[in-house]
Every structure is written in structure tokens, then in C-alpha cells.
Length: 232
Image (cartoon, rainbow, N blue to C red):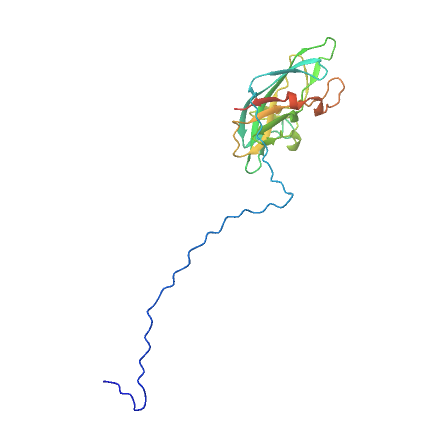
């Protein structure tokens, strides 16, 4: 039904609803990448270079040298190696119950054979006995990491230095001409360790057979005379 407008009032036309509009979003602006500022006076550490052992001896290759007094002719070489998670020994020596020594969680043992010989007397009338180098003379190196040899004193009641199914741990001891001072070096390494590409370095530290005192490592110039074998 038509709508009437009362007398005296003007007819009002409803305002037209504007068409719906969509705002155009602004274009994204690229924020330039920034790097963290290095505080003044702070140096960025330089990664340690990986040692290069291009002249390393192959396992089983003997190295001949003389002791510090040039009395004894000596020969040493590194042999085969093997990985183990633990080993058996007899605390307190033979006749006692066997015990197992385990590597720490996430670690293993690398066992490396060493043979040491006195091949002759270089000066007549001098002592025919010689004290072989300490086990700490041998260091395991891979990349920029190095590992010291496991000391038998860290194994409870390890008195005879003997490991079942392996042999004797290497240690310094007196030998005579044509005698040998062989044994096994033990290193505790990460569980993922691979012997390939690793090396044994040798810088002799030993008891002087003449004076009876331990020599300083400085008596041997390791920078010039470091002996190296590559493991496989």
C-alpha cells in the first residue's frame, strides 16, 4: 500500500547506500638483512688448522734412533689396532676373579700395539740396559683432536698390566740387547670414532738409564723429530 506524507512535511528520500569497497593492502617492504655487530676490540676466533702428516710412516714400519747419550741403538714401531667397548683383566693379578672394565657411556677403547727393541750398544763398555719410553710418549691424533693414553693406575687393582685375549698393556721397563718392550696402548675415544685417518705420534719421554732420572720432554725436539704412524 502506498505511503502518504502528512501535510506540511517534506518527503525525504532515503540516502543511497554507497557501494561496498575493498581496501588495497599496502605492498610489503623488504627489510634489509643486518648482521650482529661485533663489539669493538673483539676478535673472531680462527679455527685451528688440521695437522698435516704427509710423511707419516705406515703401521709396522720401524723407526730407529739413539738414546740421549748415544749409548743405545733403539727401534720402535706401531702395529695393528682394534676397537672394543670393554676388556677383561684380573684385579690384583693371577688367581683372582676376572673383572671387566667398560668404556664410559658413548665411548669406546682403541687398542694399538707397540713394539720396542734395543738393537745394539753404540759405545763399548756402557750399560747394556735401557728403560723404554713412557706410555705417555705416544699420543693419538685425528683432525684437530688428540687423545692421551689410558693409564693403568686409573683401572682398579690393575697390577699385572695384562688384558685377557689382548696381551700386556705397554709400559716403560728395562730391556737389554735383543730384548723387546712390547705392549698395547689404550685410548678412550668417542663411540663413533673411526681409526682410518688417525695417527699415533711419538715423542720419547723416558727414564735415563745412566742417571736414573726421568728426562724432560724438552730433551727431545718434538717440533723437528716427531715420529708419526698412520693407523688403518
